[in-house]
Image 1: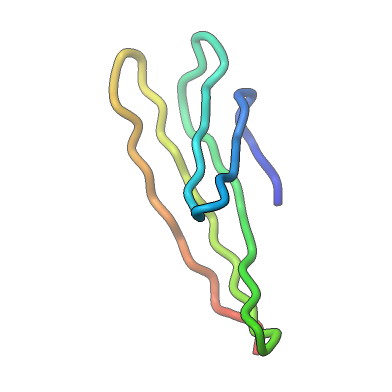
Image 2: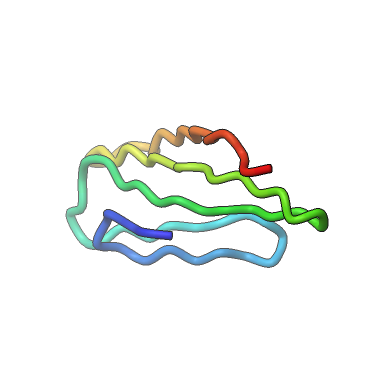
Length: 68
């Protein structure tokens, strides 16, 4: 996947993630990930974080159509 922000992204074993923004970072941060099941079917999702000064980030996830 790719990361558009300048902070750090950590994927956790439970399927969650955490993003630590760089000092003073604002605006949108995006990253993509792909999941594949045991049959080899996969789907790609894009996560968008909206960072605003002194606020709680807004998260949106856009799921792309899977590969069969």
